Image (cartoon, rainbow, N blue to C red):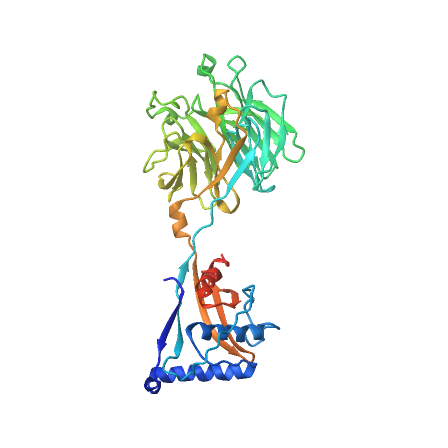
Length: 478
């Protein structure tokens, strides 16, 4: 129930003054007269508008100096100022006249449900950047994006300010920065390097020091015998464990590489489960297998497979893998990220899925999903500040076509609608009319859902503004 203020106006005859209701009217009249006398205000009538304005003038005069200590002692006092002083419109009608209108105020106080703020949208400008990958550096508090067409890595602030932090022209020709991961313990950036040049194919993992911005190593990722016979690997995404080891997906060969903290690369997992499920060969992404990868602190990896929509759990010690049983597939799943509360986020070029599990990902459930703008082709998801999910709109298909000249790209926060409903904050409003030695004052106190008083408003309002300021008092505290 939403807090509101109801104003009831009623004509009271002389005969009615002897009733219980009339007695209350007389008592209100006496109280107003007493307080008005104490602060030197004279009035002649009480109508719907005039009575309220009279109380305002009393409060205003009392608050022009300092607020009395006996009014509010504990909460922070925040006056809601109006750019004018109310004026009285006295009438010649007596208080006891049959035509006198008596003001009765009823304050219905209840919980008010707050709505979420607008999702955060970051637009940044960099001609022909076409970033495919996105990560977040919690130390520097900025996002980091790669590039399809340029051998650079760039930081992007919350305000959309972009800065080149890595420029590596010595990389192989036509090299692109794909998957990115920040090594927080060692202050490094790990970057998957893939060359789309069929004459000079290259797949590797580079490590850069985030302080000096210098390359620490560039490791070439080995091929399997089948790939050496004609199948070209496609290094796609990277995840880090707590020891500094990196795990890189091969999207073409459906296996996982491992690169040690020192840069030694090896083939880590070639589990047969990666090729167990059927692939729709008519799909435009049928050649993309293992893709997004994330490390879970309990010692395993979660990997999404684009062309089957499957999610795999891979042991980080021995590489054994199993399919995670889900209530629905994740078709064309690309990037993956894990929130601090264990919720897994998987992005495709059409959707962002929200997943959770109660048994360490033997099974899982998609409990919500959000539609994305497929024309801008989102490819990556990351967890930013306060556990917020952000997707990257890098328009990579336009970049791969070689015909694009785009300058503007976006990083956008995406929320679960179901979580937003659950997380709305209950705010309780207490409205009271009090009296001090200086006169009457109208206060609105509001609390958050922890029931702690966080603000008190001493209001200077008129009848029309009353309801609006009650609402304002709630939402200013959120």
